[in-house]
Amino acid sequence: MMGNKKYCYPLTVTDFTSRFLIGCEGLESTKEQYAFTVFERLFKEYGLPGRIRSDNGVPFASPMALHGLSRLSVWWLRLGIQIERIKPGHPEQNDRHERMHLTLRPPPNHPAAISCSSRPNSRTSSTSTTTSAITVTQCGRICVGAKKINLSQVFAGQNVGIKEEEDNIWLVSFMQYDIGYFDLDACRVEPVENPFGPKVLAMSPV
Image (cartoon, rainbow, N blue to C red):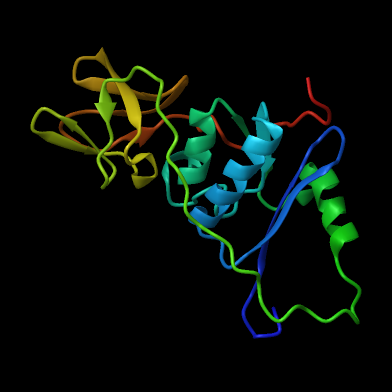
């Protein structure tokens, strides 16, 4: 809590190998629009990482969306960045990053600032380079003929591929990831096994 009784939400980014603190921004909320701005600036300054490890909270994940994907994580995938998520309730799987937070924590007698500094929150959209069959509508649907298939709003404006695997059974893919199946009667995508779910994470980069 800041001096003005409002909360500051720190967004911190570190390099796994060197433990270098790449970014530390005090944001006004956990809304994705703020995180987009920070990561755009960091990517321009330091380049794109091969993968990003995060917890399962907003804005990195969306618990109500397909496979827990958020607009931010979809954008990362579009940039060719792999997603690594720790298991819920296991911060020790991201122990290097958590240790950095302990180092940054101010002493108990250090008063909080009055407010967060003002900062721009506009962002530019990334350009799609993938070849796909369908563009997801703003309400998160795939239109196939006269049918509207419910997918997820996190994919709004993104291109996805659809392929008929069996009679009236269609596979939906996003980039190289298979994300679910649908039929034209149910009109909703049923997820396959989560390709971004918790897994055994290496303690050092490959």
